Image (cartoon, rainbow, N blue to C red; front, side, top):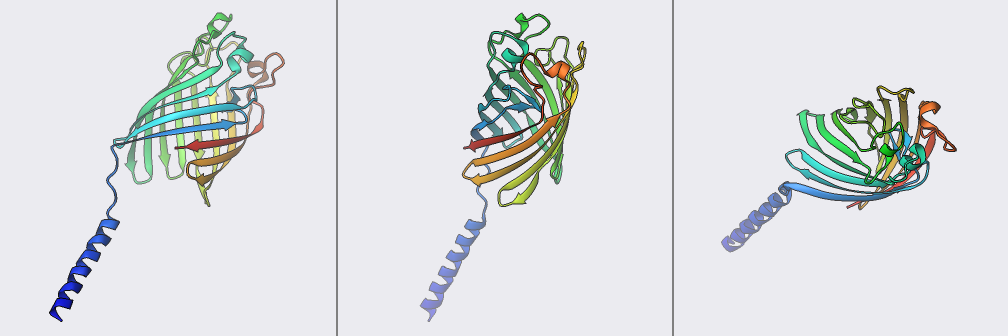
Length: 254
């Protein structure tokens, strides 16, 4: 009996130890490195088509440190530099960004950073009335629960517009979890571009429904529109780059 009692005690202790180990969380890694690749029926930036309403192939990489520091790079094909401005070169966009995310209190977070939109070998500056398309912005965002408010301000000329440093974009978005991998995201933004002979300020709005299928695969559909003025965003045979539309996207993250 004593032998059986001792064996039972050892077994109980072993099971308890295994249960405790199972409940112990794995240590948080110092950093994560993730990648993504996707395709969209029309690449829109703040409601304005960057591909003249044509599809885009996109890819990115992100580094995130547990301290809150992050870096990333993202790229896409574009058409607006050639189609809208009439430059001879400029068919690629590469975004480089970095910043710091932190928590103010429970469910209240902030994000501060800088991003540069680079258009390799673009010749926008060779067209009379335009500047180099490369643009750098600083930004700050606050998130409370499901709602995020973000302010971005250019510290250089803004997307090929002369004397446009100080261009600003304010946006508010919410992210609602509908369950079963579905999220609904309403968004409202306003862009200002100073010192332009023709007013280029506008407001954009969108509603995006996304489905996460797991294993990094997700799809999205978005309805969007703007009040972008024809005088600034319509040229030649191209329609207003901010016209209303429905976009479909497919993305794989790993």
